Image (cartoon, rainbow, N blue to C red; front, top):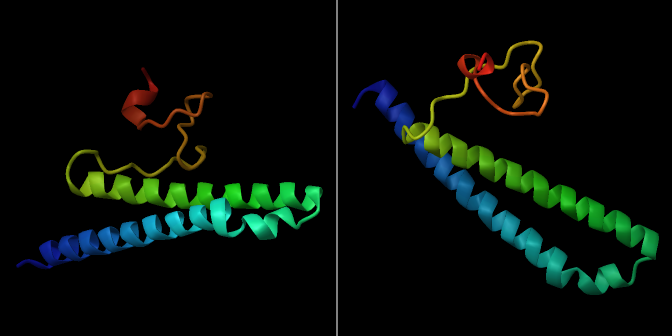
Length: 112
């Protein structure tokens, strides 16, 4: 097996393991926020309860972003997607500098 083949296989195993862990963590977070934390949450002052809800939304949103990134890496490795190009310096990561709508595209699509 070549060095590149070994690295690719190891990277795939790492991404698969991280994906499994991220899914478990997301499920545990959802369970806590939906069920286990209910008693503690109901004991909070209403304003603090809103703050707690906002923080729980941040946690779950960040976990979903990690899971989406890992799924993208899987798709790239499987040849289902092209590897992403580096963002140009004037572009925000994940956003095309040529689209105000926030569309994600590569330089070839930007002129269309």
